[in-house]
Image 1: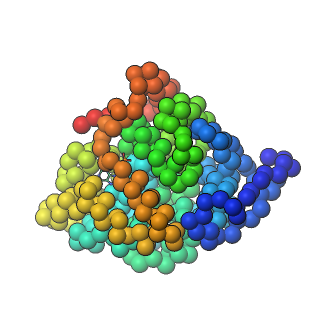
Image 2: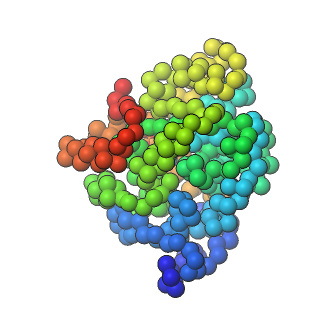
Image 3: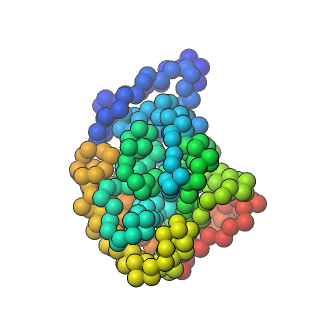
Length: 331
Ligand code: A3P
């Protein structure tokens, strides 16, 4: 961005908790403007990870230092990493995986953000008790390099992009990434023009990155789909248990499916507000409400008009050319 100075007011806006330093923006930093409706947003870009200069500065660690430290973080053979685009059911899979690895249908004591590469300093992640189940919305280029030298298992979770986008708008508004006044029609039109290579925002980019990576033929990666989990949770949990090598236990798998149903998990999540990485109970309660919004397959039909749907399908065909994967859009 040359010598241009970017206003970086980190002191006057929404602050659930400003606990990290955020160094001044310099001419060496890459700044991108994201326009998804309302006021365009200026973000710091580190690799393909974006940090909203105002709303996410100081709430999460400064990505200029944080991402290199995550890349260089030590990993253990028995660490598991859940990788998913935002709104694909990451919370759900994280609880299921935690129950499977603990051999008990008890909810994880903490909120999922406490184990996220995006939010938590590497030394804190490393100090967390085993079994460690990290989670992230980063693409493979944001993962710790040691993931690939060790025996770590990766769970790659996908969800159909139409339901993801319906879920993404309240998520972005709720986190104040976007203005609360932005309407779905405006958002989806702008979204279909989004070009920035962002792991957090750009589903097409994120998914292509992952498929290209999978095509390289890495070991220890297990792929799941939100819709399959919704359709037959016990079967999907049974298959996952096999991959995780936790032993056959059909009673436990049934219990986990029940404990992790949408309504049960939402209820359990409300008691975890204390354990969010942000130390602000009101904000944490709101986040829980839009994180567990509806939990359905096919809600997109209530939002996509025929015209938008046709445009989206054409865009999908263009952007995902050569990717041979069939998403389920209804059950
Ligand atoms: P909706 O907004 O469509 O309801 P993530 O955890 O990656 O942020 O994904 C959140 C999405 O997963 C939300 O989708 C949420 O409701 C859904 N979800 C969470 N737990 C679920 C469950 N137990 N069953 C079905 N969907 C669930």
